[in-house]
Length: 401
Image (tube, rainbow, N blue to C red; front, top):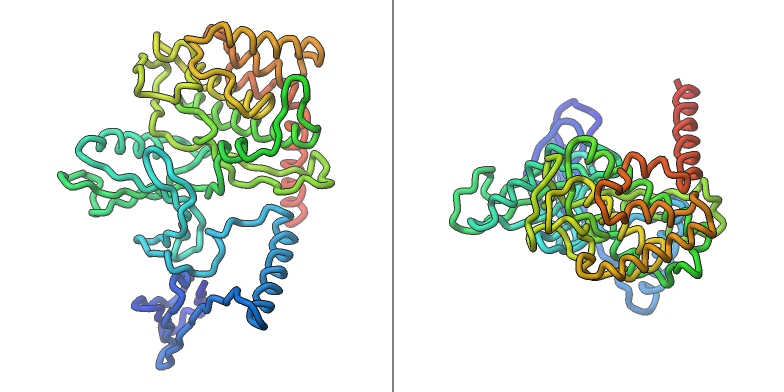
């Protein structure tokens, strides 16, 4: 980052751009910097990881860097895509520097992005709009823009059109970049599938891991309650559309109150702003997460609660799906719910299984809402931790003021 704090001339020149104040990201491995009549070249040299003395220096450097990141971020180290060192694959896009690929989905590729002026970190989702999908593409952009900000919902902060115009002129395909914050390092799908072991109804999760997953689930319910309060139905809640912003890599000796994590709801390609919706079989949602009514009758926000209930099964019971297509497997649903209900009888109504049973009610009218789910006693400690941290921040502001 090149920062100019003295507004007096001469101007500073970075590459072909002259500026008097503010900051700019050094986006290339080799940058020309001009200060009046003086000219410099800033060059980032990639160390070799070969053998000999150079290899040993690199090994020691990486060791010190890892120790610094662990101590600074307390185990929650930033992903490589966000490190300041420029890379060959970096390329500028308007005010943004697009970095490495983070993930790919059915409707686009997600990369890391850094603002070239203020260094802000974000995620850039690149989609290609064509004559066939322009309506869907613009609908996702419009819905994303209209979602009010919330800590557990991704926020669209910028949209960049390859041809510079929101209006699609066709007929050639055009790339569009949607810039979202916060930056998501991974999906909940990857987290679940990479877990070495998961719970089962006969072998519950260890207490610390259970608390971490309750934090994750509470935040997802909070984001979903926000969407529902403002009239949105997401319609495609699943682990791949739930992003991990931060997660402790090692639980170690952390006390439950010290465990910090952040997750957000992503991807508004199927989201609508309406209290109810008509079925559109085969076009909306992901089959294993579809509520029984979603492809057969009018539905509301309950379909999101059902889908998140299936995600809850994968977090708290076992990472495999409980069923493939529930309307055709009602007997399987009955067995799964009966097994959780039996466990509730053993552990009491404070257990997470009690909440999952209410989220997976077959009848949408009987299904618990996101607002009521947030009040469930299984989250008592999570709510206490949130309140304690909020009070600590207030106290800190009062003392600093």
